Amino acid sequence: MEAAGCRARALLLPLWCCLLAAAPRRCAGQTDLKSPQDIQVYVVNTNFTLRWNYTGNDTNVTFSAEYQWLDPKTSETEWKELPGCQNVTDTECDFSSAITEYNDEHLVRVRAERKEDKSPWSSVYEMIPFLIAQIGPPEIHLQSINGVIKIQVSPLESNQDRKMWNLSSFKYNLVIWENSSDAEVRSQNIFPVDTISGLAPETTYCLKVQAILYYQEGLFSPIHCVKTTRKVNYLFCPANLKVSALNMQFHLHWNNPYKQHVNYTVQYLLGFAKQLHDDHSGKWLSVPRCENVTNTKCNFTSIITIISAFYYLRVQAMSEYNKSCLSKEVKIDPLSTNEIGPPSIRVDISDVLLHVQISPPGGDENKVMRERYYLSYQIVYWKNSSDNEEEIKVKEIKQTIATISDLTPSTQYCVKVKAFSEAYNKSSPFSNEECIKTPGDKMLPLIILATFVTALISVLVVAVLIIFFLYQAYNKIKYVFFPSCTPPLNIEGFGGQLFGSPYLPTAEEPIESCYVIESIIEEVNQNDFKDYKHSKQSSRDSGNYSNDDDTSGSKGSEGMLEKEII
Image 1 (cartoon, rainbow, N blue to C red):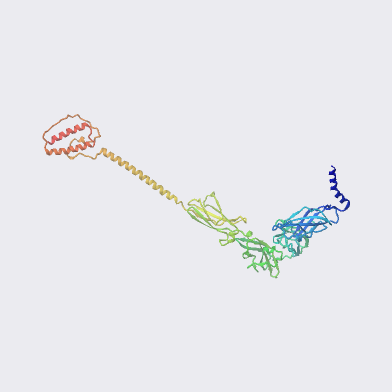
Image 2: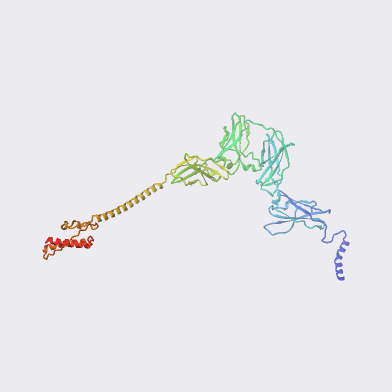
């Protein structure tokens, strides 16, 4: 225990000595300076400001800052002194000169200092300059002339070598109001060089402008006020400018309220010129064949050379007294302003297929209509009959050739087509109707012929079979009732009934059997008898004489024949 107490006194002794020997001084490594709080970086255009809060009550305190540039090309992580933010007495400093890469990540920290004493570093503030930068207020110039206000917006960062923004992407928003207590505030988009019209004469207007980059709104400019002048109204000024366009053919029309002789010149300006910060008043060009004309229309198709660009048109009038007046400007977006005309079609028939060939609006040579509008076609076809309830069918295609099937033979069909563009939400009127009749059904004659041939063959087969069976029946009947064998001539007179049909029953009469035996028969008659006997034997072999009675009868007849011959 005693050893432990000595050891504790040995540890506390230096601290006591320090407190006694350096009484208002601090011991080495010890300070009561607090670290800065709430570190913030404000970026406006390319102007960088570092701000912080300090809650200490110390006097004669200065602040210093360090930064790191996390260069993606290197792995350097060294802290460096932040230029413009060393030993400053205020709680903010400007370090615009230190930052040159606006899309890289940077780290910033601050500490308080008093002579040799230094506070701990503040928390580290991380930033990518471009993401936290604000668009600064633009500088504007105003001019009041002939009842309008001409405004010119100076480019942002025009006096700086390094720039945060791409000026060509900026749009400008104008807020204007009458300088009165109950003024109505209105807002509109303007070009860097523009004219504000529709103002009351001899009235003071106040306005301010802000720059807009995509969805990021910048700071407003200081408020400027200006008084309008009285406008000089010329009766011969062109009014009510209207543009009509069909299949990329553009025409400008206007009214002439002045009944006296007036010459007109149509002028145009490419839209990109208005996005520049330069004065474009001297960049207007005359439309060919629309210079010093007396009529109130102009075909300006020839100037539309860039389909995706914007154009501005105006008409300059020159009176007989050499006084000039400019109309209001009209904006032209060629693809949006243009209207799609009806296509032309040609129909043809092959078998029961209807072929529709479509020529795009404006003709096949009009590439803009084909390639820029991404045209599709709606084909409407129906049977041309008196029945009002006939179904109307619709077919949509993207090609210029279509084939329609499932048609009825020997029927007239009518077709009409319209073009439409989904990209621009435009459609054309329908084309002229074309009607054509489908040919008759070629299968029907073949079916009829095949049916006829089949029926004819069937009838012939049946007739042949009937004839065959009749012929067979006839042969049987003839064979039965009219046999083909007849007795020889030399026995034709004997026993008429004996050679009748063997199948017909005959009444048998009882006869007596008589036998005459002669011993001598002439040789010559023997031959005749043998012939008869041979004929008789053949008749027996045929089956006509098969019973015994007939045999006995024949024997008797044979004996009688022999006797008679003798």
